Length: 148
Image (tube, rainbow, N blue to C red):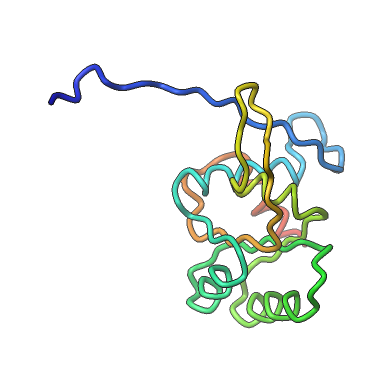
């Protein structure tokens, strides 16, 4: 069997998620948009760890470049563990307001034919182990962490 001519190209439109974002100056991305782009690129390049177990392993092994945590997490021990690991290993930590939004950004959902996310699973923690490609979003996030 030959693989020549069997390529099927699928163009899935990016899911549009409304987030309470700070208005950025013209030509600049907001931090939330930049975070969404970085998570999407990392997901494509298999550089994400999702969930407590995977995130704790990646943080403890110092494989993580960036950690995203949800503010509305109900378990105090969960938040303490992730924050402590990030502080001990000097890993950048950013907080997001909603677990469903983070789950969508981390790829924990089904995309329907119109490109809308369906069956979204909430996620409390995501770690970026590999950024993938350099993008404008990555530069915006790195500048955000430098100026913080």
